[in-house]
Length: 450
Image 1 (tube, helix red, strand yellow):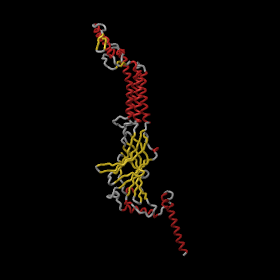
Image 2 (tube, helix red, strand yellow; image 1 turned 90 degrees about the vertical axis):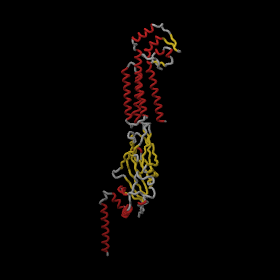
Image 3 (cartoon, helix red, strand yellow; image 1 turned 120 degrees about the vertical axis):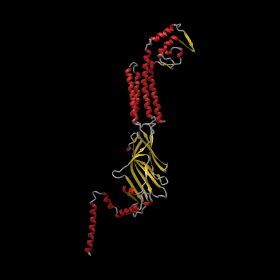
Image 4 (cartoon, helix red, strand yellow; image 1 turned 60 degrees about the horizontal axis):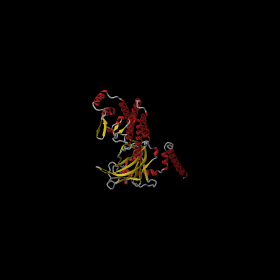
């Protein structure tokens, strides 16, 4: 009797020793094996049996409760990052974890253990059950993350509730309205819905914490500030039916720092530089001409560079308006010297002798300096004839402005503004800076505060 008891005890000890050796061989390289030692073998067998029973007669091509009621999909989005935003391509990039939850009564089970209310399954199980055919309607392209393993999660609760999450990176379309560029604000949407199931078969709903975001300091917005988000639910009517349309709007505001340094400040300095010619002597033609041409070419270059940050839209943006007005100021400064130079040398040019003789022979036949009334005006015939050339170089003096001293004489010239062409630079020193200052006040107040 004692010998038989000793043999049984020895066999039990040997079995325990063999089991420990089997697990010990994998202890260093496989932590999961150690965890399996802590899980009763009955639980593993129970999970396997549950899955086999659930999928035994399961048809993944049919949605839950088909022909009975619509399937309700609770959705939620966790935003990992947003950006960059491309104004030229009118799109933005977003990295999200997209979560969908629904009830499939065919996957209800009764677990023999209270510690297994939920089955967390491998991503390989995703293809074995029915999934919603959710699509992102405004996505240009999208990629799922597969490193180091497919970034998918599938959980089945014992009441048939399924949680399916997927991490993806989406390049979504965002129609930017660039009228106020670069002081513009945008709401970039992320739109999704079912591809084939209309509203009477699938209904999407936002869950309690519908949209959440990560720490924004890791986002790659660069030229934009994130102002907030909001989500909506709409209906989309097509020839195939009426679909539930879910939309998340991300509100973005553009930062002006880059464009202030690259465009606004250079344009302002170029305009101010063009005013230097007003303090250069009028007879310094090479200096003033070179300065005018240089500033015009500089503004042309700045205008081209500013347009490189924009798509080829047909309307005028705020930046286009500013650059165009700056170009006009620079061009006007150059035209000012052209006018000054033309009139200055025209008044000093002696009249042709032939015309002098013709008019002098005409005046000798008349009494000297007779005064003839014309309405309410008086003039001298010979002075009138001589002034035809000296005043406006062969043109009649019918313009509103008179630019020469001779134009001040005679009653018929009354009511016209006299401009001393020699003082044109003095006028420009006041007119150009004042006009540009007023333009800037109106421009910045209109786009920043109105």
